Length: 253
Image 1 (cartoon, one colour):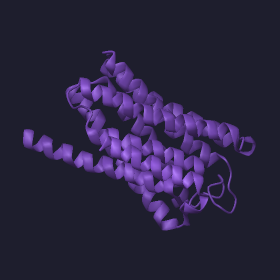
Image 2: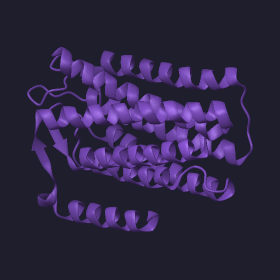
Image 3: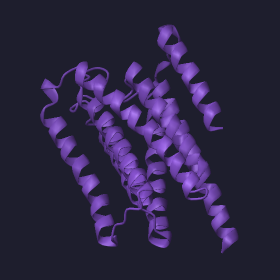
């Protein structure tokens, strides 16, 4: 399933890259809000589940996994709150007056999440340990760092570069997420099936979502692109996996 998913998404990405007419871009305000809401709620669920499993079973990778998805949930919550409050035009979230800030915030959130996932998996492979107090610091520190990045981006909104820095961040963000999936696969082989296979497939989808985001940014309200569709698919896979995990836990209990 992992290989098939990678090959299929790679083929779709190559086709869209070579033939721009195949790129899907739609102005759909309600659909955009639904995708962001589902993605944010799913990220909250994965973060909570990862932290609960860490508390009950241990495992350093779960700490960083919880922190990574908490950052993604925080970014989604920020965009939803701005859209619902009707102040999206002030921060350049609308197509009528777009700025670089939303693109940077989305990209930095995914970049930070990817780095956290990689660090967690690598540290777990090396049998690293953290106390419960240190684990809480990782979680809260990640959210604090993301909050500071958001403040910096918004304060420099009018002078942010349009291409070079943004493209570099997207490339690194997508690479870090795909890389974390490959490292988690090694961790799965070593830990006897943990983390679950659905997380590995989801991370591959998330990495390709970042690549599609580089082709056509979908960070603005009302705009839905292939990157958004893949992001939604990523969280659907995670939700299905969480449901399966919950059923297995109930059977074990």
